[in-house]
Length: 202
Image (tube, rainbow, N blue to C red; front, side, top):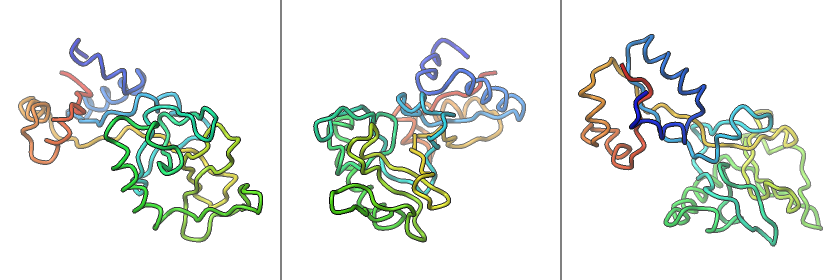
């Protein structure tokens, strides 16, 4: 790793960098990786939290926030923007977060089921659904999205943004430079946002 790539440690754990480097060297490829939300790193490998799946399109919160009068731990986790509000996101991100949430909530999200006192009152997410929102307003992750493969809500785990390789290919340094400069066809948008980083340097 070179000095101009040190900021990769803001978005990947050191031990993950080593794994990507070893894999890239072993297979003689470059691996372009999207930046992980820095706040998500503390949840990686922790019981009760899972990586964001490909079918999970809602946005990850950028910061903790006050929701219904209490400070909630939201940063780095996928949230329901209609509950946590605009303050949980970086400027300009909230509108897109709401748009993505509206699309997602009509497909894989289980319906809110509350008792007469407004407390969560269900054990299983309905068939065909795998996600639910934490609606216990006394919980530190109130408003965060949970995933349960078994549909058992008590087995639900919170979702953090994961490390996602964008592409890999045989090592050609000129191709990597094209990625970094935004000249490659598909990953250009990522490169312009500054989110393409070298996972391994030869």
